[in-house]
Length: 298
Image (cartoon, rainbow, N blue to C red; front, side):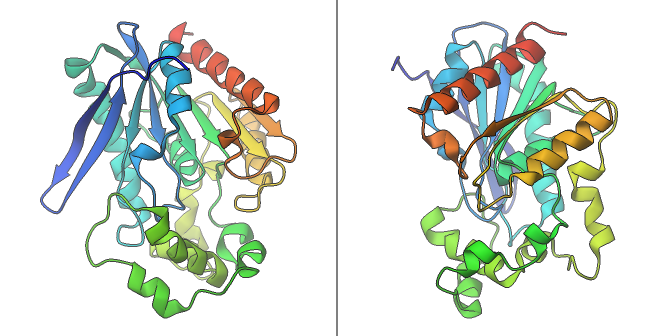
């Protein structure tokens, strides 16, 4: 492995009761295109520092700067405000970013994992600040489907988390970073009980499904949705592989450039296995996709 590139920490959004930070990883290239990375964690946990250093290296060695962001977490903060944070991060990188770093604010891609990939796919629905390209690692475009709103068969096989335990794990303050150790039981409870979508949106999907439609990228694709690359393993028990199949189909139907890389027998977070030739090949395709839509322009 080569040297990890220099990192700068910036505050991209500050209000009186919370501060949102991002880690900026420099690349050697001047006026570089930027990969904005959004971490996963079911929208309930995670931090900007969860980006794999190997992935940072792959991006920076290929001439991309990386901007890995925090965002407010549910259930303390609901989805509309979380999406607002993502918008504000993109605005910051476009307006303030070039003042501090040698980047090209016209060349931004958004990459996300899992719930972060869902947020990345949401950026394609933005009216302003649409990225030039989106990469979704095992993400989802639909939060109204049974997979999300019903009790999860997979998670229900695990020890059942009592409601009181889950409630104790939620805070009465805004949370912007949450460790998996502290917060995973919150997610486990939410997926076992079928309350996950209500926890993150404040909307009961069984009663007000139509209020959730606007948060579903799969239902809101327009002709100017950015080119999108989806990666998903067929053995994913957390987010069904079909979520990426449906998303690709919906994109293609609107004439949007879309590609799905299927990882046979791949599980959730398959990209941790960087020794796997299938994963290596997939990541090579991610870089090619980003270069095509960012570095070389269109």
